[in-house]
Amino acid sequence: MPVASEQSDNARRADDERWQLIRKVAIELFRREGFARARLEDVAIEVGIDRASLCSYVRSKEELFVALIEQPAYQMTRRCRAALASNLTADEKLRYALRAFVEGLTEHPELFLLFSESQHLAATFEARDIVANADAYGKTLAAIVTEGIRSGVFRADLDPRLVMLGILGMHNWIHRWYVPGGRNTLTEIGDTFAEMILAGLRA
Image (cartoon, rainbow, N blue to C red; front, side, top):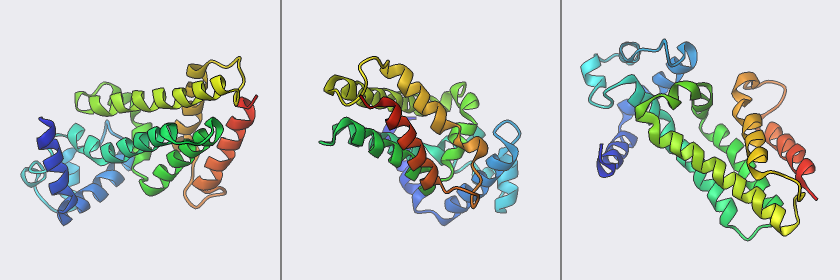
């Protein structure tokens, strides 16, 4: 689908009350059943429409899944790039980026689907842009670490790529154990993770 057409679809959906209901139902269905078991027909039934009406918004389960998470995922990468481009010191850039990551989860809980279903996404043609976006996010994070090493803020013996993978490993698995309303809020988790990471990186 051409980019202009995709943008037009996104704009149309954003202003459509039925689409907002479809999103709400689909997020809960994917969370409850998982990507592999969820069906487009089930979304239509729970919304109270037929499949043909649902297909006027999305043509496949894969397209629906991507539509739920693409904009929040892109926003997360934009915030990380904003941290890199800022005038902050490297450690504060990293703190800003990590805080933005957790804020993204707080503002858009559907992002938990992105991490819980990453294996399916990697093999889905419709998700190719999201996969590329995830790669861009990782490279931006690594660039912040590289800057910190070069400026002397972070230890000189660090491998930026390895640090980046470690950070993503911590944050991308929050979905496996985080309980909304549980012992720790997402903000508390994010702040603790940031302190742990920065304590290990600083020169």
